[in-house]
Image (cartoon, rainbow, N blue to C red):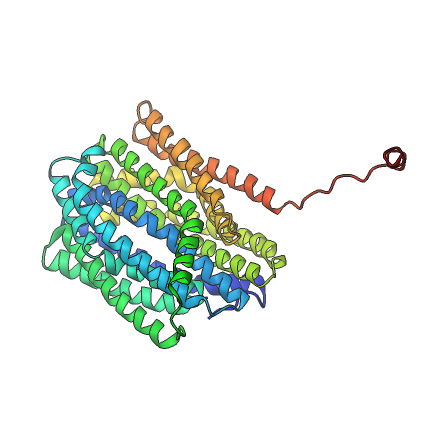
Length: 452
């Protein structure tokens, strides 16, 4: 386990983030491979169906992401403070939440998916394929969310290497099964979802076995302690959960806007969404590393290290973003041609890259600073930022601009949302970092007057 309260600041953050980035690169690499397999085997309609179903899955995943992050922050605080006695109660409350939300998510997806597709303007064959994709994923929610809970537990305790190996194993198996089910057995988009569920089940089994062997949790905690930890996690994670729910709902609105331009545009945006997430992984994991770093140091009473960590991580982010953006911009045509042979979809993908990636730095700096704020338990600030940048800026701008500018208006709305989000984030973190200014001391004459 990584102790983030000692040693060089940036190397500790990088040491925590890099294993997670390697695991996430494998996972998102699988998603890119999956998109290539679906696009080349099933065709444009398959890619469009996955793109239509993804926001609905993200909506089910949104609550878990927020509350799971709260458990990670809580475990990091306990590790930094050296309080291992409460870890078992946290683990039990995390388990209860995972089981409950898996069942709830399954029921919501199976019962409401058809109405959600109607709401966002998805009809015909895309609905059948989208429901096949979603229903298969839904029955695997216990394994999918269980694996995410294992990752949240290990990250909170600083065991990022263990999380890397477990997640990486699932990703490699996932990629192999996706090829077998989709290209080999011709199961279509349902085969892609079945590969995800199967790999998640294996990763969950390996993760639970590792936790059982490596982290003896001590005697069973009383029920009130478990209930208290669950209540605290819900309270801390509620802003994060609402943030992700808002993102999911906003993405559904964007799908509704993009669907008006046809399946080719929806397929192209499915590709660029996967690409955008892939290129964001390093910065999301730096954000997670900074979050754990800040939480541990606050727990240990070492808050003096946190400003240094923020400054050095932001500088590193600027340099890495310049490199990533340059590579993606130069390789935009070959990247677009990987996923589909459709000329129109390839042109749209390349144009999206050309419009958005010169401004990618706005997004990466924003998410890294959000990691600092989450670790400092200021989870409401990223929530407000999401509402302002995405729900109140990007989504309305996409609606207003898609008329006069066409599909390019949706692309420029992404840039506008990033810029507004970064501006708000920098203002918020500046206020947090500024020391309280004491009132000026009264002059001698005024002091004498008041004394009288």
